[in-house]
Length: 174
Length: 144
Image (tube, rainbow over all chains, first blue to last red; front, side, top):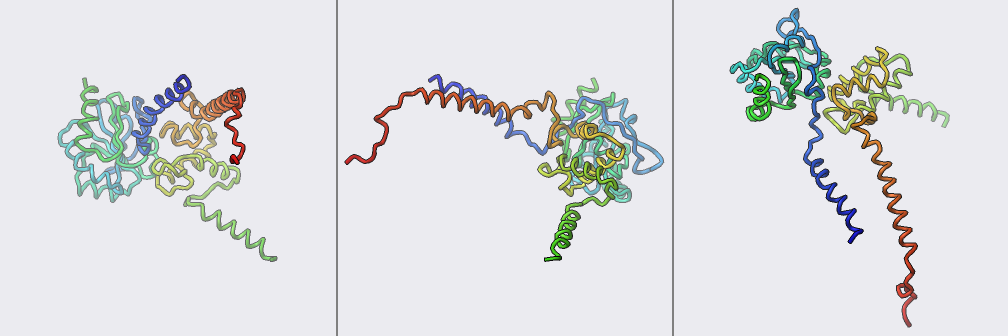
């Protein structure tokens, strides 16, 4: 009997590890900034290139930073929900318009509405990389101190909002 | 046959231009260019994860190549460039993760497994060598 104990222990240890491995989705990269200060940036705004949107604008209230582009199908999908959020005035939404064309982006905001307090125009994509974005849309929840509380990659909707964002916002504004 | 070396050279030249997908100009210095080529082969493309950014045409791969070119031309070391990437995307983007507390296990696991297997084999072989040979089990051919 004794000789079976070691393999049995090995199997019992391995099975939960393998099950965990099967459940984790390797295409979802965790953000490296959770709990850390949001990356520093300064970008000309989409609507007025002479004005800037920078990290300093994020400090003072809980806010969202949404990375978007007109080339991004998921951004179109979540746009309605962002408009709804903006109308409810829950949190200010700052946009980072990633690797886009200014005319296209302005046209998009005219056509579908503008949920953003301001959008920074990240034409060459460097700020997106600084935020560790690997696709769009990505939405970051930023604390009043300018720390990243949460990052969601993919189109945002009501159920994700209620499940992930709302409790954190409630916790952060206490 | 006298044309063969020239033809070979042409083939090699075509092969090297076929793999380049950067539209920007490369480094004039061949040493820097070689370093760049080596570095981008070791960085995982974050949207197409089983490709390196050297192989991938995804926009994020092109952007990361541009950032690496910029960092090289700014005189950053390989370790600093790896740090730049890891700060933003995590250890996962490096095909050769750096040796640290978090990644120690994946670095030493092969050696541990090798050691474990060797010990197991030695023990099994030793055990069996000490077993008496049971003559009855030896097949001496068909009984006549």
